[in-house]
Image (cartoon, rainbow, N blue to C red; front, side, top):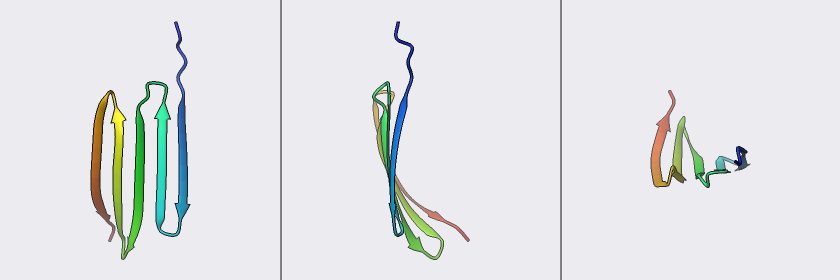
Length: 64
C-alpha cells in the first residue's frame, strides 16, 4: 500500500496581481488569480479539479 500524501503549491505576486497553483497526490489541482481593483475591492477567479469534479468561481470582495 502506498500511503504517501503530498501537496505542491506555487505562487507569484506582482503589483496588485497574485497567481497561485496547487496540486496533490490525488491529482486534485487549483489555480487562483486575484487582482486589486482599488478602493478596497478585489477581483478573484478560481478554477480546479477536486474529487474528479471541475469547478470554477469568479467574484468580487469588498472591504470597507
